[in-house]
Image (tube, rainbow, N blue to C red):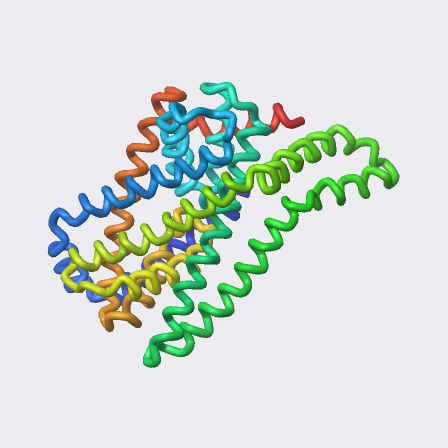
Length: 337
């Protein structure tokens, strides 16, 4: 597993080297100098988006009160920091969030894990709606590269199928159905204890989708708002880089970048892939690829600041954030065995 992670990291580093080799570094530096205090406004937008995401997460934890918002925000911060540096993006921080909810706030691993699955599901479903709006806007631009439109349509279709399938598995308890079928086979008795955990977990998911629909659609709407805040962030970044674009172009750019990020989720921090996506997409929209690399680096600066904040909160929780991920995974594994 460590070897695979290392290979993914090497792939990301290789892409990053390629991006810089294809970039006018002098122009890149001059673009970054133009931003001035722009990073402050970027952090404000991202901070607001983070609070929106936290509210959406609380919708999937109906047992908590509004006064828990700050607690969930801190857990979300720590989980996001670890999730960005571990493979598999947001799911990389899931054990951390589940562990902190259990240890510090008394929320069981099953309830915490169910809420994490639910918020990630609404996040992914809302991403499809956002990307659909971006692909639609691309189709309205006659001189936009046709290969970009084709790529975005195919990617949107594949992502939609995968995410819809993920939802169907949860909504109709297909994991439990398959588990029941396996338990009836020879040696199936060995999985009965594990199956009981799966069935209870599935019931929590179905309960939210069917009996908590207002909360489901509320979380879905907030996550959709979050995607458009990401486009607003790009709009602000390019404004401070001295090359303003329209809101529609910002949505298109964010759509193309997120399509690439979604397809390369296994690379820690989407290192290299995010920069490559910005290079190509911004080049297609503005004709200045170096501008896209500068925008990507602005986002990296924002991420680094957020990482530092998240890891500092992790230190407050555990006293040693370097061991937090390992402890969280071991605890959650022992709880569900």
